[in-house]
Length: 441
Image 1: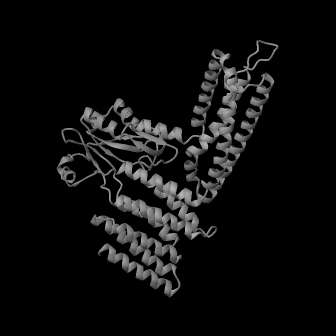
Image 2: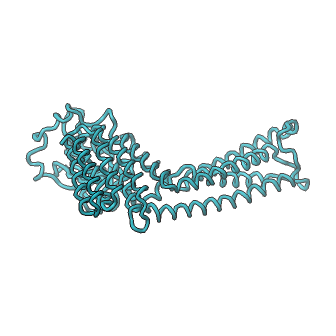
Image 3: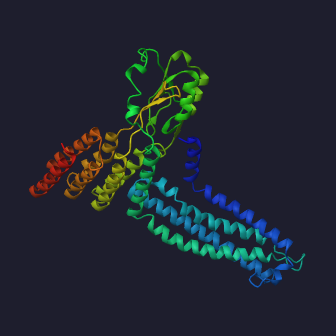
């Protein structure tokens, strides 16, 4: 995985509201000084251009003051609308989805445009001089300020439309589903994974017989959610020190300070330098991210579905949308090879034993809670069985089909307990038998 630390840094910057607006504000400062330089060097030639601002210093001051004042007012209004949208999203869809709103590039560009135009106009305004001084009206700079004001109007129109659409359930669900697809493509690429030749690379004899007696843990120096594991760094350390490392946690899990991150064999090679290097390969944070945690976007879709199924909201159609997206993601995943848990050096010596995520775990994550809380809704139950049938049509590994069969059986048994009408029970049973036929069991 290419430079996971830079990827983590970019993800942290991208999910903050200050980064892109700050860059745009800096760009506004550079633009202002560039325009002033051009104005100063070509002030005599500007009079011949009909589209350049040709008013006096008072008019320039009034124009720039009006634009600057309106921009800061609109920026405050846009920020207030954004905060309201965040509150609405947190209450209706769950606080964990706030991260998706925070990394919305459109909102960041809107805020940066208003702030950048405000700063630009202030910087140009300070250079306008009347007859009491050496007369100087930066005609090109004022014209650019007018163009920025017109562009800001277009951005405001975009923001009004954007703010009204990003809080719609369909938009939120499709956004999370897109993150799930991206995570699958990133973590389960078609050209990688464990094929038949890889399965034969590992044999029980490759793990030393005294592994369990001569391993020692390296503990975490922090507390938080494991976001990234730099496997390239771990492999490099393991090769340089001739170690065999067994990871004890995978991205997405909560790690306490002092809990083991890896087990190191042989233990006599552990020193403080090695402990520091291995800890640098693990990035912990306050929240989960989807960079190496494919379960995280699945959990987000499940959370939206569970809130929709709650008695206070009672919106099964939103839950069905989530099931459709989970079905699409798992179907996508079922066609991908899962990477091996074993990592080798160039000499094919076993160096790392990772903690793999399995298709069965992801299926259980996607369906367990929805199945439990939706068992009294016949439409949701039928849709779950339909989703399993669609995933089964894309699944070719026997143990993956067995995981889907288990879910179908639990959905069917839950419907017997949750549905009171015989007609509904019979509908579910018919659909269940169709699923079993699709699974071929």
